[in-house]
Length: 121
View 1: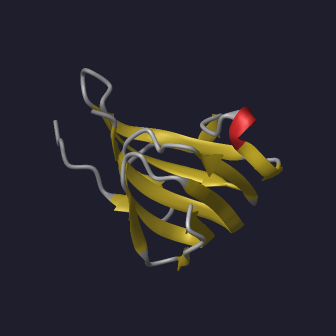
View 2 (view 1 turned 90 degrees about the vertical axis):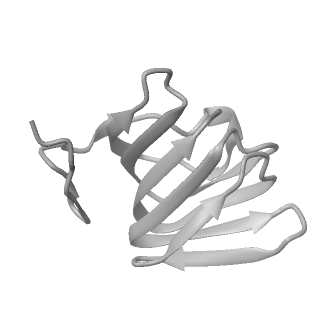
């Protein structure tokens, strides 16, 4: 069995994106996210997850981001704005890191697909 998973902009291995609901409805401040994704790998305790996720445009607010997350944008555009109003926009080919406890907003400007590695410990 090959434990290495090839990850391309279209997906990972034989995984297909399926409808999902990651965004908490109470956090949405604009739009109506239509999400799809797939989990590539998850630790036995569920504290570390690697996957692929896509959403249509929307915005959500974070009072305290629940974990440390590294993301690679595969397509689309997203803007993260911290509580002080500092905004950074990321597009295909760029990466970003959101630390646990981040306060601010996450706005999908154009339908975005990303790979993510999320640690919730």
